[in-house]
Length: 147
Image (cartoon, rainbow, N blue to C red; front, side):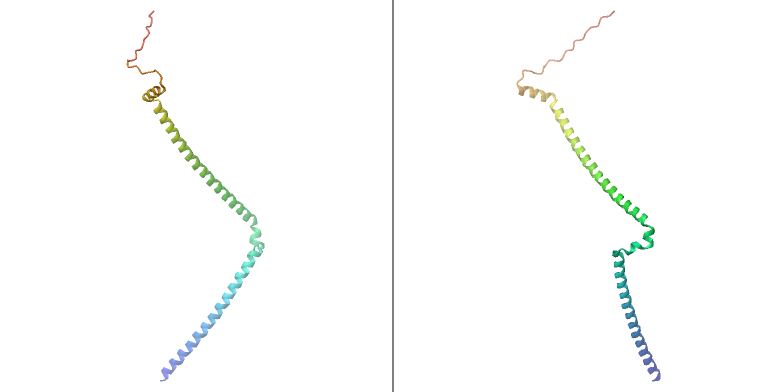
């Protein structure tokens, strides 16, 4: 029986210790959360109040930060201009392609109009008294004198 009582007392002490540790950790967590919340508030006020600009890091590197901001603005502007130029190139290429198709269509139409059958048809429609000869063409050759 003495051994059994010893274990029961030991278990009871352990559970009391565990309850004490749990309360200790709970209190510690709540303090940490309060500190964390107050740090967030301080950081918010610190940043939006402008206090961070007075720190040594910013005072020493203000020229670099301004140069970095200027480079960022130039880079954004450059990318915008390049994009605008690419859009213009695409528009002009499309316009050129359309102009080439129109020129090809006009060229084909002129070739059709220039065919002999088309010319004969237009002469008949105009009522002109011109006709194509059925006789072959004769070429007159000039004789050259010999000396």
